[in-house]
Length: 160
Image (cartoon, rainbow, N blue to C red):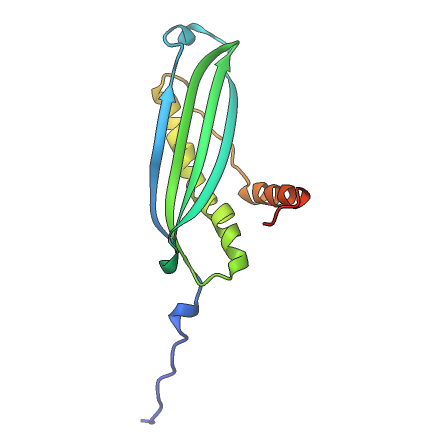
């Protein structure tokens, strides 16, 4: 046997950490204002989707952040509202030891990418339970949305 000291492990504190702590529905509503007459319409509804994300520290000292993905989906048949779905899909994330310049992209791209599949499932189920065919939302490229937002802020002369 040799008398070797065990090699020291690199400090865990310096390694970047990105963990999902909790995914939940913060707010959710479904409205079918023109039921039951709207179900007699045979045309496919025209769908409009609005999307927004926001992130904020919950406990910044411990790297805990909340991101909320808000979807507002309205459907019309002719001039009548078929349904309205409003969803706030939220997540609590532990993000530690990231360089400061990587925090905003992590919160604006990474977190919404994790939340979107949950939101898509919730919307599809709600629309189905409201009496309409399931609504399959197309994937969203949050990186492109983030870059567009950054370009718009730079064009307006606002700091990032």
